[in-house]
Structure formats: C-alpha cells, structure tokens
Length: 456
Image (cartoon, rainbow, N blue to C red):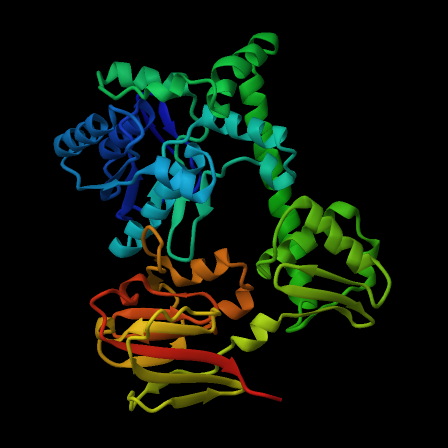
C-alpha cells in the first residue's frame, strides 16, 4: 500500500518492483493523476498508450497534450489513431462500446508486442459505482454485480491493474490541484445522452443526497459480491474438473441436490469453456436440460447437447472436422493437385492461374495470392500467442481470440488447423484468409486450397 499526497494505490496485489507497465492515458484528470502517481512512486518502468478516437475536434489536441506530458515525465509514448464512429457503424454498436473495444484491442496488441505483462487504467471508485449501477439496470447476475476488479486477467499474456479503484474522484481532483497538474477536459463527458454520464450527473448525486454514503456502500456491496463469486467459482471449478470429461458432462446427485445458484454457476462455467452462446436465458435452458429426462436435446451455437444416462453429451460437426494432430510441411506445390492427410482430415492444394470471376462458395475453400505468401507453407496448429490479420478486418488480433469470438470451444482452439507461411497464418479453414494474401488485380498465380473430411 502506497500513499502519495493522500491518493492511495489501493490494489492489494501490487506488481513486483521492476515490472513493466503499459499505462492508458487519455489526457483527462484521472489518467494524468495516475501517470503522476506512478512516476512519483518510481517502482515500475512505464510506457504510456494513448488512443485518438477521432470523435471530437479536440482529439488532436489531446494527443499533443499527452505527448507533452510524457516528454516532461521522460517516459515512452505510443499513440494510435482509430475512426471509432466508422467502426461503431461497422460493428453495429454504440460509439462508447466501439471505443472501449478499440482501446483494449490496441492495449493488448502493444502489451504483447512489447512483452509488457500489466496494463494499467485509471478507473476509480466513482467509475465502479457507475459500472455496478449499469449492471443492475441490465439485470446482471452475481458476477456483473461485482463490477470491475482491481486486478483482472486480461488474456494469457497480461493482466489489467486498476490501482485507483477504491479511490474517490474528489481525492484525485485534490491531488491534481495540490500538484498543480494540467489536464484536458472531454466535452462529451457532460453529454447525459450517454448512460454513464446520466448516472454520473443525474442519478448518483440524487442517491448520495438521499442516502449519504451511498457510493461507499455500493462499492462494499460490489466487493462482497466479488468474494462470493470467487468462493462459488472455486467450488464449482473443483466439481467441474471431476465431472467434465472429453465428450460428456457427468450429472450426479451432488449437482441435482445443489441449490439453483450453484447449479447455474456450474452451467455458466461449462458453457463458457465450450465457447457456447451466453446469456442468463441460455444458462437456464442448459440447466433445464441437465435436470430433465434422458433423451432431451438442445442446440446452442455449434453444439447439439443431449441428456443421456451417463450425463450431457454433445456433438459438433464443425469441431469433428477441425482437430489437427501434428504439423505438416507443404511440399511440391505445382499445377498438379496434392493432398495431405491427418486422421480423417484432408488438405488439397494446387497452383493455378488467376480464375476468372471465381467466387468461393464455402469457407472450406480458399484462393490465395501465391506471390504474397512468404517462403514455405505449413499445415499446422495455432501457436499460443500468434496474431493474424483476417480479410477485411481493421487490424490484427490473436488467432486464438479470433476463434473464441467465432464461438469455437476452448478444447478445440489449440488444435484448429491453419495454413501458414513463414510470416504467419494465411488461412484458417472454416473461416477466412489473411488480408495480405487476398486476390488483387496484380495477382498472377493463385494457390487453391480445400479442407475436407474423408468419407467414412
């Protein structure tokens, strides 16, 4: 625990001294105070990240201000530009959600590239109150009511640290004034059309007036929920470890006699591991299947689940087609068709001239620009931290995260086959090709590929 001018770093699991930090800085008062506190503390090497959302006229000025601050503090800076409004339209979501996705995707990418294990954000107690309120209004369960965590595993390579999560905004403002800090004001923060701003300016002050101490009480409520969820997760994880077999979810009397909250949490964890579609309604559907009669079935995403005497069994036509056992070096690529086999899977490859008006009719067939492929080719499994840039996407992401977004079960992702060259993935069968090997007007020679399952 560290005190600096009454602004407290309240995270119980402080990073070890010397651990590299990637600090998200918008230029607003919260992140500027965070940067000031971390630099003054001096225990951790810092790299600052700033995302220009291009949503406001002041956006360029914000980026210039953050650059000035990092020069004054003598810390490195990464600035990235995204047109969030366009991305929100493309993704069919609000600009707040699109901005959040852009920030965290970019933070994850740069943290991985620089091998920085911890991302730091300036979320504080008032943000936590707004988060919990928004979760209450959308009808969240126990996990959502716990709000944000001061430490959270973000992916397999890094965690998110929120050192100010138990610090009041008033204390942050007081620190800024005492240290005579400057910061940028975001004019959109006063726009109450956004839900968070409405809570901040209209709802929370009314609650605090009617019930002084409301924010402290709601923060404590969230902490208690987190502790309850952690205990429940620990219990259900142990149970699942003993009852989740390769293709069967074993239902025993312990499960049948447990209270419904425990049962729901087991189902939630199981479905999360399977990358099935997720909602409270889906969890209830799956729980009803578990407690129902033998022979009942339900379809969730790519899976068909069935209640049997041994437990819940499932099948996925997709998953049975995509499970590689070893890596294969692709040789003798020429005008003749060559086949490569792995179990009951088959990859066919042929070098052809650029087809005229040829359209790919299914996602198990691909046409690649051969000249854009780098060096030799492999039919192999995905590397753990491997990134790729899917066709038409705005940027790169971890291939395993891409498959997760496509609702591929965690048990199949690591064995999912890909075609790769020396620069990385060029095609993920079942989905799409890499942007860099797309067919263009300049393409001459084309690599035709087809992935299939051998006949029984």
